[in-house]
Image (cartoon, rainbow, N blue to C red; front, side, top):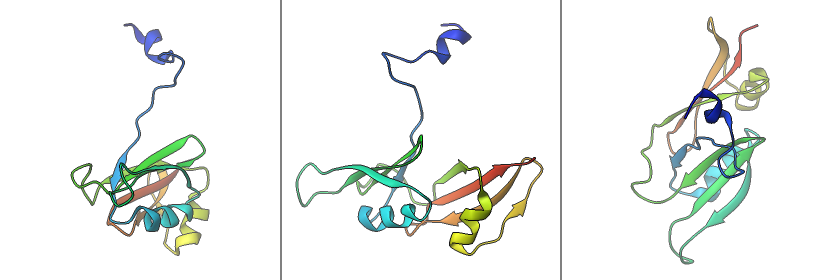
Length: 122
């Protein structure tokens, strides 16, 4: 495989990495992520009373929220690059920090997962 092959879709599908975040209550977590502009795409349970596995998306950005023990660990850090970090910070009432590479803020979801949200520096 050369560098050009890496950019080509695999079997008609774009390649991507999708972080899996451990959550205690997927419905509660999905409501929290909705404040960041994410919407539920689908939910799966093997049976009605078993843990949920949910996909949320914001444009082309997707996250998996899993109630399954062992899928991921709380306190995971995900970096989310957005066009307007100030709008996110205003929604959550948190400050924006200036870094040489971006303007950033950090949030914690109800399960302790960390989201560092940033807009590239001009």
